[in-house]
Length: 305
Image (cartoon, rainbow, N blue to C red):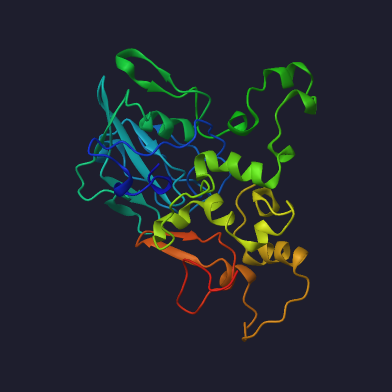
């Protein structure tokens, strides 16, 4: 929720936001797993027995209805105020500090209200990108996800025909059949699409580096790959997110088998220089997907593509 949403400047006085696409192919966080268990009913997730990460604050501390986020980066809380409004809580739990701090885009811990039936459908889109299937409205117009978390049908669509056809591959949508640009748009429905022609993007805003398709679409590697470089080149959607920089370097070597550097690299991985990490705020760090040659100390736009 919070790490995938725009800063306050893109919202109006009522707290509505520029809508993302209605499609929800993926989570808006950067989870260790390809499946985001959010939104989940509180109390918040308990400690993963395989992890030393502290659990997020409990319902008693936040008094929220829903927890958005896998917890690898952050967990943001959402509650229904009344039949007409939801509130995104002003305090988010951050894994890096294992504590609460202001939700991105918020200026006070009071939270931001969203109209349930706002024309932008902002709060509905939050639920849609963090769950599977179309959200429904229950009693008192409560938003009810069809299935919590980002699961198979978020990317593949309805699977009943696939099951009835005994798993026939042509009986279900497979995003891998899309072109690189099409896949960028598809994943960008929740991770943000590439900018429209003539669109105004503030490339000096560190927060925007969170939107991977937006930045990848600017890369010479993407533009000159003749469709060979896509999200799936580096990321395997059915496996946990790779954390080994050397693994990504092997992908780079597929197109750049021999590179002559103008400066000593001291054995650094490709991504360490060409996809720098950007601190969007003290608690959040994202990888800049605008692949390029960066000047020393410059991590937002490459000096050379």
